[in-house]
Amino acid sequence: MIALSIILAIVLTASFFIIRNLIVKNERLEDFISKQSEAINVCDKRLKELDDKGIFYADDQIGFFFKEVQKIQDALNEFTLK
Image 1 (tube, rainbow, N blue to C red):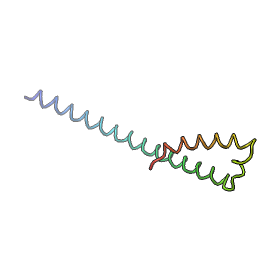
Image 2 (image 1 turned 120 degrees about the vertical axis):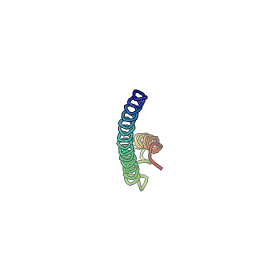
Image 3 (image 1 turned 45 degrees about the horizontal axis):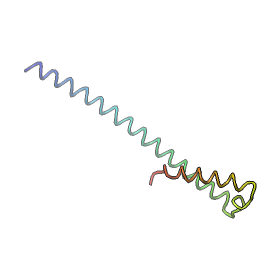
Image 4 (image 1 turned 90 degrees about the horizontal axis):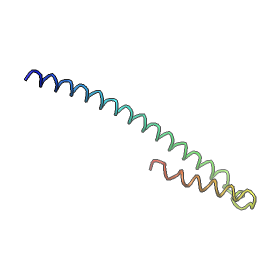
Protein backbone atom coordinates (compact mmCIF):
# COMPACT_ATOMS: atom_id res chain seq x y z
CA MET A 1 0.00 0.00 0.00
CA ILE A 2 2.85 2.38 0.84
CA ALA A 3 4.64 1.50 -2.42
CA LEU A 4 1.47 2.32 -4.37
CA SER A 5 1.20 5.68 -2.60
CA ILE A 6 4.83 6.50 -3.38
CA ILE A 7 4.40 5.57 -7.06
CA LEU A 8 1.21 7.62 -7.25
CA ALA A 9 2.95 10.63 -5.68
CA ILE A 10 5.85 10.37 -8.16
CA VAL A 11 3.48 10.09 -11.14
CA LEU A 12 1.41 13.02 -9.88
CA THR A 13 4.50 15.21 -9.38
CA ALA A 14 5.90 14.31 -12.81
CA SER A 15 2.52 15.02 -14.41
CA PHE A 16 2.40 18.42 -12.75
CA PHE A 17 5.80 19.43 -14.17
CA ILE A 18 4.98 18.04 -17.61
CA ILE A 19 1.67 19.90 -17.79
CA ARG A 20 3.27 23.12 -16.53
CA ASN A 21 6.00 22.85 -19.18
CA LEU A 22 3.43 22.29 -21.93
CA ILE A 23 1.39 25.30 -20.80
CA VAL A 24 4.47 27.54 -20.89
CA LYS A 25 5.36 26.33 -24.39
CA ASN A 26 1.78 26.85 -25.53
CA GLU A 27 1.79 30.43 -24.24
CA ARG A 28 5.05 31.16 -26.07
CA LEU A 29 3.61 29.80 -29.30
CA GLU A 30 0.43 31.85 -28.87
CA ASP A 31 2.56 34.99 -28.46
CA PHE A 32 4.61 34.07 -31.53
CA ILE A 33 1.50 33.47 -33.64
CA SER A 34 -0.02 36.73 -32.46
CA LYS A 35 3.13 38.67 -33.42
CA GLN A 36 3.26 36.94 -36.82
CA SER A 37 -0.39 37.79 -37.42
CA GLU A 38 0.26 41.43 -36.56
CA ALA A 39 3.26 41.53 -38.92
CA ILE A 40 1.22 40.05 -41.76
CA ASN A 41 -1.54 42.60 -41.19
CA VAL A 42 0.97 45.47 -41.19
CA CYS A 43 2.52 44.21 -44.45
CA ASP A 44 -0.91 43.91 -46.03
CA LYS A 45 -1.83 47.43 -44.96
CA ARG A 46 1.48 48.81 -46.25
CA LEU A 47 1.11 47.04 -49.60
CA LYS A 48 -2.36 48.52 -50.03
CA GLU A 49 -1.04 51.98 -49.10
CA LEU A 50 1.71 51.72 -51.71
CA ASP A 51 -0.75 51.10 -54.50
CA ASP A 52 -3.76 53.05 -53.31
CA LYS A 53 -3.98 54.78 -56.71
CA GLY A 54 -3.34 51.64 -58.77
CA ILE A 55 -0.13 52.99 -60.30
CA PHE A 56 1.97 49.89 -59.72
CA TYR A 57 -0.79 47.51 -60.68
CA ALA A 58 -1.38 49.22 -64.04
CA ASP A 59 2.29 49.54 -65.07
CA ASP A 60 3.33 46.74 -67.43
CA GLN A 61 6.90 46.38 -66.22
CA ILE A 62 6.25 46.71 -62.50
CA GLY A 63 2.70 45.33 -62.65
CA PHE A 64 3.79 41.70 -63.02
CA PHE A 65 6.06 41.91 -59.98
CA PHE A 66 3.41 43.75 -57.96
CA LYS A 67 0.76 41.16 -58.85
CA GLU A 68 3.09 38.38 -57.67
CA VAL A 69 3.74 40.23 -54.41
CA GLN A 70 -0.02 40.57 -53.95
CA LYS A 71 -0.44 36.80 -54.49
CA ILE A 72 2.15 36.14 -51.80
CA GLN A 73 0.41 38.58 -49.47
CA ASP A 74 -2.96 36.90 -50.11
CA ALA A 75 -1.41 33.55 -49.21
CA LEU A 76 0.00 35.05 -46.00
CA ASN A 77 -3.37 36.58 -45.12
CA GLU A 78 -4.75 33.06 -44.70
CA PHE A 79 -2.45 32.62 -41.68
CA THR A 80 -3.67 35.62 -39.72
CA LEU A 81 -5.73 35.35 -36.58
CA LYS A 82 -9.36 36.05 -37.22
